[in-house]
Amino acid sequence: MFLQQFVNALALGSVYALFALGFTLIFGVLEVITLAHGAVFMIGAFAGLTVVTKFNVSPITAILVGMMVSGMLGWLIDLVAVRPLRKRKFHHLAPMIATIGCATIIINVAQGIFGAEVYRFPFDFMPAMSYNFWAIQLTLLQIIIVGVALSLMMMIIFLLNRTKWGKAVRAVAESPRTAALLGIPVERVFQITAFAASALGGAAGVLTGINFNAIHAFMGGPIMHRGIAVIILGGMGDIRGAVLGGLILGFAEIMSVAYLSSDFRDAISFGLLFVILLIRPAGIFGSNLERKG
Amino acid sequence: MLQLENIVKDFGGLRVLDSLSLQVGEGLIFGLIGPNGAGKTTLFNIISGLSRPTAGRVIFNGTDITHFAPPSIAARGMGRTFQNIRIFKELSLMENLLAGMHRLYTYSPVAMLLNLPIQHREEKAMREKAMEILELFHLAGKAQRQAESLSYGEQRKLELARALATSPKLLLVDEPAAGMNPAETEELMGEIVQINNRGYTICLIEHDMKFVMGVCRQVAVLNFGELIALGTPEQVKCNPQVIEAYLGKDVCKL
Image (cartoon, rainbow over all chains, first blue to last red; front, side, top):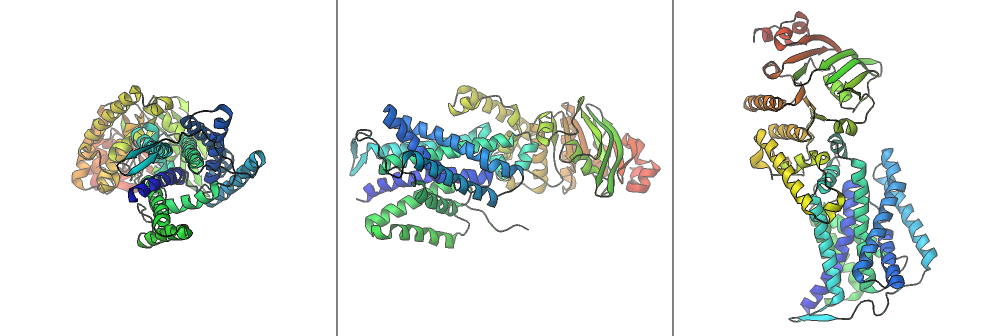
């Protein structure tokens, strides 16, 4: 029983982690809390759903399409809403408000196109296969979710640590000015980050759509709250923190439903976050957020 | 290599640089000295594009770069370090240098995403090159350490190593020996000369006169934004105007 719940929690938590990873990446590099990340997530889910219903593609293709579409949307949001403010040296608050506007527009457009109803993937889309390991039953769905989420996270961490663009992203995250003086194309780094982070959000959207088999224009809302909680829990802008925080939240939710009561799911899991923050106010991996000067 | 023509800089009503003209020839170690507030760092900022001159021109390798932005000046081969250290503290020493080498990489984003062999080859070649530079600065043993863990003097050296990693044609170095103990300063002098022997042109600001007289082939002295002397260290240090404005009589006897 516990092991079975462990697998369920891993599936839920790794999707939270994936969502939060993109969220924290944008915060760390662009210094913007992008409140459009939930809308980007929703569009990813719809993009995946659309190619499945229209062209009958495989789950992996649907995820890749979701990532591309969300990535491009994230890039566009940066171009239209965030970059003009960055150019005029408005940081933090103004771009955050601008992303709320973007989220509203995106959600309204999605509502206009798809209506307010809840969509589902076709019945035969995901074969109901499952595999037994010891006492645990793994469904194909869980294997795909955990496999895709973990490999995307590992890929991002590899890219950040081992490639020229990864190092450029980390250098810009620490100091855009110094990076520019070294000849790093800072604007391109911002654009690449917006694209990659939003693509992760899109992947999380498709995975969530498949997992709960419910896709609608407002599905980005609840995960936005969780995403914010997770990156605060992990330490703002910290990659490891986002991954670990996402997994912790997933475990807290599943375990509280399994062993306590589903009525108190959010109260218990967010209560846990609150307790962790009391002990480590800057988050698990966060350094001091004390105001400088 | 670098040509400054009648540079004027006003901050409000204050003239900090007054019609300054200078030339830095290729292959030199060029020293820029003068009392605090003489306009040395302001001049560096103008050369590297962080600040615009009120009048005058900056010509770098035959191109007028007066109105270029810092990144494009950096891309043309100008490296610099700062008085207040600006290393990436959260990155390792190796990663600091690799970030500086960003422009030297050639592999495409496609090669990166597909993890093609060219990416591995190039990453390896860059690491070797970075390691060579770290060795030059006696920092190779700490390559994987986080930059924050270095001592103050080592952080200065790392910033210099990172500037060198960009493969600059001209290296602007602002007070490299500040805060270093005599042993570290001595070591740094050797390293600066070694960099120069490898063909890099260096222009440095420094207050440590032993350092300046020891490594520079040519020295310019600024006072209140005006060039008051220019020549070899020997010529400059006994110049009466320089003695009065900055050095005092003792340096002449060195």
